[in-house]
Image 1 (cartoon, rainbow, N blue to C red):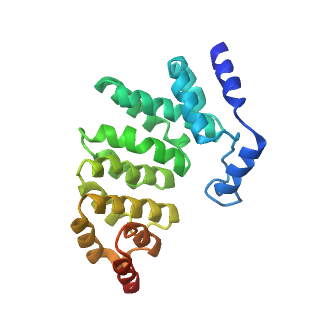
Image 2 (cartoon, rainbow, N blue to C red):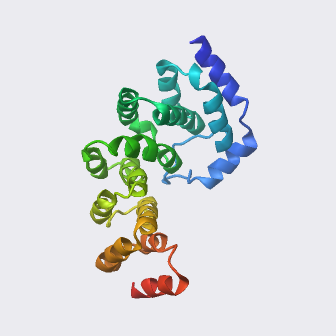
Length: 235
């Protein structure tokens, strides 16, 4: 308990009201917006990363659980980054333990940046060598962030040349109502195009008419300008 308090106090010396205000204006914290119930200390991401790296060994499982359950956005980010670091260098048993802990604490992975810094490494990294059912379970969730985890986790798979899951998930989630999902799916489709632009074009030919415009714009971002214009004119 003493070290937990010391780590909390040391971490919070990095916070400033000015940074907190900028974070509140950057994320959607208004009534009814996606970050309405999120709270910001005012610690910049590079500072959180540096703290996670320099204090990794001091985070027991109990302390990690404490930070993961924090109301403060940056404290949850700190716990996630420690997990990400440990997953990257961990054994198979360590990775499985971290994945299970991550899934059990998904209620706290509740903003797009928290998803994006953790899901590709922990979920995507684990599923490279395991059955992929978790992706489809999360994709069925009513929770926006769970669905985003499912999509963004495929980044690791895509970069390894495995695009099957994101194509299936994209079809399934095409009608998702949230703009943050349109952006996430479009981003992953853009990554597919980096590996095999023919696969991306084939997917677009089949689905462009039903794709939200934001999703399409993200997916074709790396296309030549004239080709981008041509796709956008189609819808």
